Length: 362
Image (cartoon, rainbow, N blue to C red; front, side):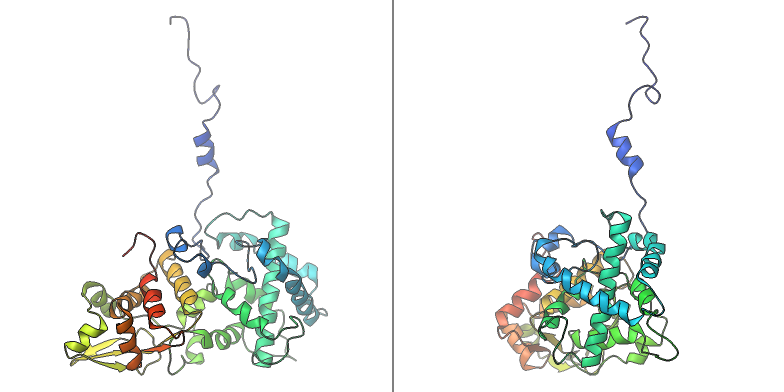
């Protein structure tokens, strides 16, 4: 219509809702190391990725079924504060964590819904709980009566939750708080050494332990406890990974029928798989109650946290083909490749088949 002039869109018209959302998008952080597990994995086994006893960090904080542990965590915080009350105050710890808030938030792959004050306090309570928990487990070798929990078995209920990808604090903030405990008069092992001692017994291979000196004396950059467990399983050589991915691997029964012999690998590396002169050498895998949860969370981390080595994915690729049926699992148990603490070969076959897959994966 003549005489009617449209107003410039960017001056008089309100901003489009989509444009507002685009303007409010926060940039992706290169610090990201704590991720939500993809829905395609979570749908297969929700429980494997969800804390059952204790929440660590912001992602599961406040869940109704985890609230019972909040009082116990605060008791651990009180004991932690008592260790340093002559040198470091509660306010000092709040300040320390507040100074790292940007880096902490950037460590999570999604925005954290909590405001600054609440987020800092969540981190303080949970970090103090973890440090106190590790120190008490070390001092008592995870045996005996625990005066905080009033139930010495409770620690074994807490342990699986510390291995979940969504239930992590960045290792650096644990280190910041842990460093306040040391003094010239009371030196103690490093946090990495204490964490190593705790988690090395939780890995899923059998054989000689990874040398603590090899881990703790190097410039290893640990992101969190799931990453530490990954580090305790050194990676496959790239050539081996390529061979696994490009080879049609028969199942165990077919290999034995073809004359292939199975031998137990003798190294410390779960992924140190060799095939030479008709002999397939594989280190022993222990399959216990928590193997499923541990491997699922390691796989989820490996698949979300992009890096060159996808050793666990390649390893699971091989196992799923070797242990295709309960009969295959039985053969692998007979040859020492699998230690069966589940009792049922069918359970192991199903566990391995479902690992790392969603409903639409093969």
